[in-house]
Image (tube, rainbow, N blue to C red; front, side, top):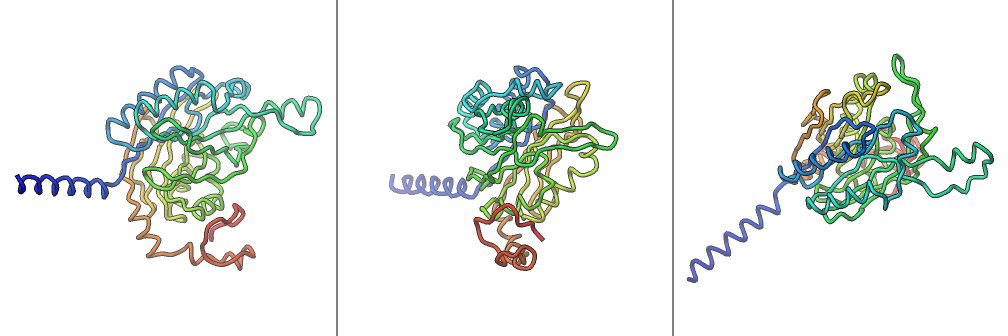
Length: 325
């Protein structure tokens, strides 16, 4: 009896130790959202069920997961508060599946502005929504709220003219949050082109960067992978980039290629440009993050004192105005 008891205890200890050293799995989703919110949410639910069944601790969903409208007015009209039906439904899903969720961007209705602008200009300002990226935990609680800082106002050669600022208000807060796969740094789509933001996230301790997106086809073909790999190399973080893919309506299409990039800049998983809905998965190895940072300690070697008038080297809490070298 004593021998059996000791053997059982040893087995339990071994199993516990094994769990401690297991690398968490992350799932990155890809879909083609349309103007049909019910159908979009059904697809998100299916991806969550698949991710949980395959052992994921976190599922990342792309920007515009709940809706891609045919006009900016449709987006504004779909705006909801954080206690509205979209978030309520996704919170229930996270709790039901016991799964953390990154909700990569939805139109969040804002409180009326105190803007001094008058007439139609003031009315338009008040009608603007936030493009909001939420992190939900496995109990369905909201753990982080990030409102997209950089808005997509561009005239793309051989592509559409897009002016996100016409109907979206910019956020102003850099957001990080601890999770089962590591410390997450939140961003959304067009933020990807601003490396100083990602340095700010790393200075706040980020180990895994989230970049949910709906990249256009022309910009995606030219820049998507190289920008994601560059951010991974510069910050020595994992990069999880969930993406919209394919034709949403007769006015808009997205590039796809949801990617998982490791902190060395290697593409670990790529969902491709056509698969939708789709799911890619990978292990997150935080020891690898620390090994790479120890071998090439760029955070400690940055010369902010030369380029930006700040102090040299690393250290937390820096603002978003310090570009990486």
